[in-house]
Length: 214
Image (cartoon, rainbow, N blue to C red; front, side, top):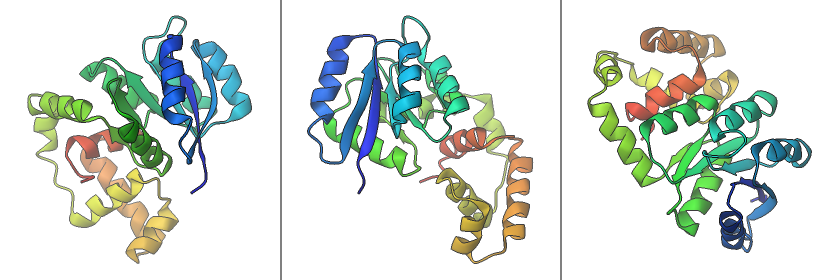
């Protein structure tokens, strides 16, 4: 496996030092840099182009949500994982909307952090158990969950949703499922029509909320 380059953003130097110590000796991870301010981080990642940015949300100059949105707009290939003290539903949702591929709480251990980095770079999403539990709890009483239960995707559409979540192209999906690209495109249109979702990030949230990625 090629090394995963990680850029760390947190306004507390002690957190930065701890994360560097935690990850620095790992054979598949290298630290691409660190910053205590989002604006400084943005300038540096334009040069270093890391695979993943590990960022806090509550920052002094720009919050992590705005930072994630800025990064994804300019460097869409860079993955983002939020690392926060809070597992608040609104923060989780906002970070996903901004383009984050993962959300961890700060009591995360080395092995979980390592797994999250590897899975996110591989095109998956990753949540700490506390975050996943919060999402599940909030969904039980949400209007969106009630509406989603009415939507019926076919098994083939669910298969395609899972491949979209892995960032497969239409051609890759067609080859994997042994169908034509035109058929894939038809299924994609039906999926977005049924779910009333316009973008891939929204579809990813829908899939997670309805446990389609399991």
